Length: 545
Image 1 (cartoon, helix red, strand yellow):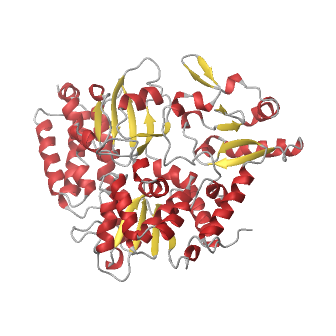
Image 2 (cartoon, rainbow, N blue to C red; image 1 turned 180 degrees about the horizontal axis):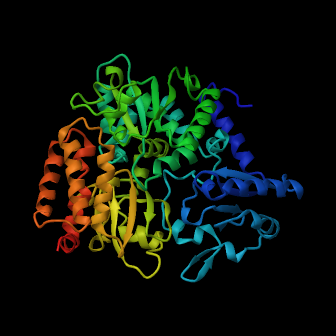
């Protein structure tokens, strides 16, 4: 039974107990029970439990249900520690052999091992997909049970909020976040500490903090994986942010299509309340803060701050003109700070280890790491975290394993439906906010869709334009009509009915939509069109001819 923590000393004492529990001399079997469920992870987990019961091994073996372990292409995946073996594409019928060979006798089953260049690699630490990453935000994903707060606390969970409450002033926290160089991971890349400072200085007796978990980009699953695999990190980040800006109430806005994420969040919030890490007088500090979940109905436009606020208020999710910005007049007209999942999950590490430690990774204009959802025509699809400044080549070929079959890399769509297509000539581009813009893409939230030599770039532009058109709220004419007309023109060209003037018409419509649309959806919707025209003009011309 979890007991309420009345002080910082209580938290330290609990961490010691939780660490001792994790150190018990047991073989640990880590089973991904989030994304891997789609390919039978629940059945594998059930068979492991049944076999361990039958063989009286429950006292010697612990099964840990984890979030995403990253290498989705090999799902369902498990890791066994010791000896640190990673197995992929595990099925129910192979479980007895895994227990008898690896769990009991430390023998590797070759047919389940990862294969690279014809060589089998049994140990997770040696697999390039993992060894070439640097996990900061994903530090706990795949290692802890997200539904067990004790495992989070054993890994110094909630110590950053304790440090903030008892060793920092709100101004100290804001300065630490500013010094870290952390920029918003939701797409725009605005400096996080500066955003907090605006909200703290805004006049208002009530202030709100919102976690934007409305992840709707095709091919993107970064925020979902963090919420499913390490929900307490996001809650702790919100606690620190709330103390910094002077907020007593927070909301996590998450799309209803993420049932596992919602379930894990609900359990995490309940556990945090039970331990007095949410609610009144947190850790005896006098600080009060609580959270609730708001489920979105799946409108992509609600990822925009003002549309998200309208949705929480019970209105139709439509953007409004800015200023006033949410920091001054947001939820119910009160000062409101909004950060996305990945941004908030960085905060505990920054406060706990300091801004200088955080800045050891990344570039001058983009410190820390970035998570990418690697999808499309690449061998190792999955979740990847690398330092800012890592090149596309390193992500796609060194970590992703390259393009399957004998096809060649053609382009990578960065930044979701509002991003741009980056061609092979920019494979050695160090990825940060500014360099990506220079080649016609955006960082976005981290979707990275790889395309091979068989991909039609005009069709890709048409697909993403169709998505943006469908998701436009229709409030402003440039976006409502601009996306419709561009989609019609792309459909005409792709169908072999294009005219010579269509390309110039597309450019003109793109310019008007970019410059005159009300919110980020319309302003960035033309990016796939402009980037494919810029780098793959020959494909447009061939279709028109």
